[in-house]
Image (cartoon, rainbow, N blue to C red; front, side):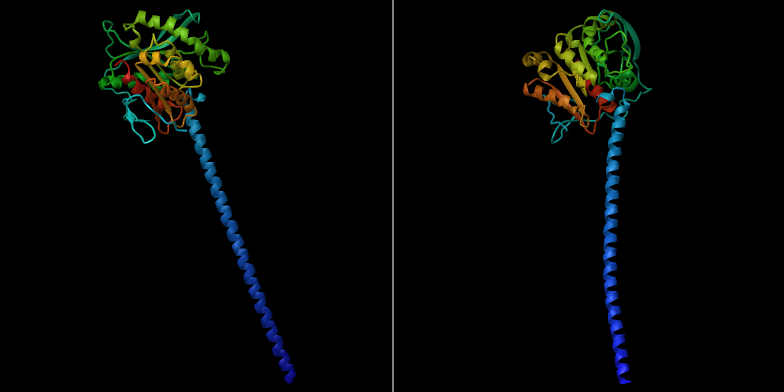
Length: 354
């Protein structure tokens, strides 16, 4: 009887010990599973966060590209060290480079309480192309044929035509406001079609070889046909100091190519986001001493996010190396778009014909 009790107690003890061992192991396994699950959950959260971050970055990039593509010429689309030959109007000194100061609010908004100039479509005979061509001409408020005016020739981009500036940038509004504020001497602004070919519309494949070539042909059209027409039909001064040439993107490249090759015709040159049609710096300025003497102003601007920034940087670096007087700006957070180009017109127009 005594032995039976002893065996029973021993059995109970063994069962208890086994139970303790089982529970202990189970707790260890459970904790391990929980740790694995926690680690897995954390990895999933991190993975989801990274995926969301990547998507947001991609979406942001796509949004920027979409915004950039909205302008007619933005289909063509690093912060450069910028330098300048003198302190021009509109600069804010930065530790790294001069950043263009944003124009005041409303600079591009039409005001009802001021006088307005007029802008009209005009046709001229182009011997270069062999037909009539269209351009827009802005005459300032109070245009008077007894007064001689300076002329700015303002060029569009590869996706545009003579209407592009008027349709998207409204230079007539910017200039009217500046004239009303006493910041600009009244001038005439000519908006030509820089695609010099019989069918000069921005349609079909705008990058086709013949259409790109037409932007080169425009040099002859401008010098031999368009300028003579303006000077025989409007009351304008006719010396090189009275002509300025500027443009955006493809038109910016044209302004550099044509202007610097014809310094006997133009003294003031501006390029806003110059495109890859821009000639190499050595071709643009083969004689730095001559260019330096002839230029009244060479003014460059490009957005610091613009994919074409390298074109302006390359040109600016060469001008700096050769000591050719020039002004170079970056537009902070700027793309290949209208805020940059309207800002360019706002400041460039105030500096010319001084």
